[in-house]
Length: 307
Image (cartoon, rainbow, N blue to C red; front, top):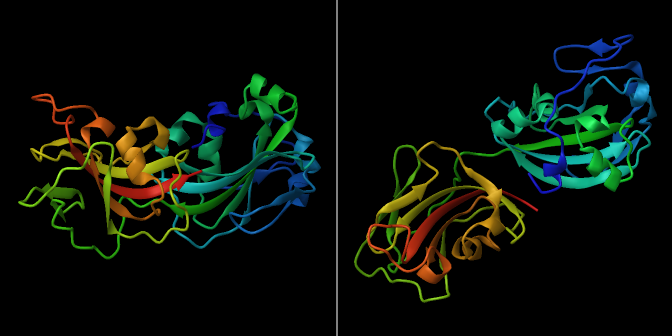
């Protein structure tokens, strides 16, 4: 999730007058909600029209699936990419369309997000509304000129499930890199061999073992979702990996070591890259007993990257 998403209040939803409330297992809304329309393609630029009816009860959450997809169902533990925008009940856009990658932790922290994704499947477009204070803090609302008694309209397009690992044609490793294989769970196994060279100071070396087909190229400011495996390039010792618990790393690329960033920037989503990182772009000169120091190597599966 991006920095804009972090201003959203991690709160539940309050109850209100249920008069005229239409509800089934997945959708719940007032009759005025049916007049609302969303124009535009899934994941693209949109416009919300005829939204004034959603303000019938500002204390009651409303959810309606306006496009039904035919993709995989979203499970409680799924990692999913959604395209999100927020609007006032007057059809004024207040949060531009952003791509978010969210997991079960995000859903546990934000009740509105869990409500949006419950019952969802890939290809759905879901409109969700509630009082603005259920999404934004009062300070954040003031900064966008929205009052605490207004209704916020959230449009979420469910774009894709994020896989646990990348797949595709595997390229043979160059002789100057270690051998890379995979265990039964798909985790990388790095084997040092004669001929492996160390990276020059100040320069990463990158080899694409699996070429991704995603349109998006990783940018320095992106929020990334990756599986990674780090080993010392001299000893072969594993110093860090996300594969032990199969939980991808999800965070801003700019917070990671410089060598990791340099290897990622410009790469396609869906790629697996192997990155040699010199000590000065990693965790510093080698210290005996600290395998993360010195020249290191990462095997990185790029699962998602959000601008």
